Image 1 (cartoon, rainbow, N blue to C red):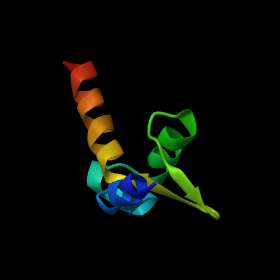
Image 2 (tube, helix red, strand yellow):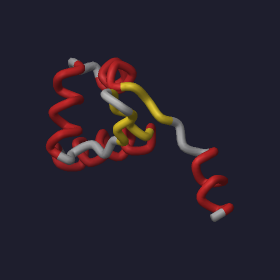
Image 3 (cartoon, rainbow, N blue to C red):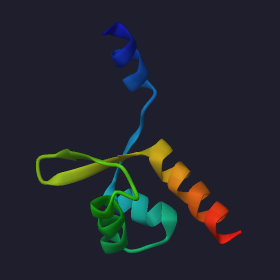
Image 4 (cartoon, rainbow, N blue to C red):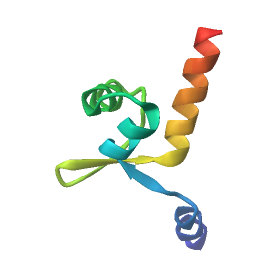
Length: 67
């Protein structure tokens, strides 16, 4: 169990607004990506948090699909 806590120390969670700003898309686009499963997120109450690594992976996948 100690490994899980140590692993979480390295995870940075972003708000939907932060993800939208990073990706230069609207917040609605980020919500659609979360609801479709294209972008993994964790729900805290009524808001979502997206691991920063998931944003990087989604961008890489999109670049690979476009090439």
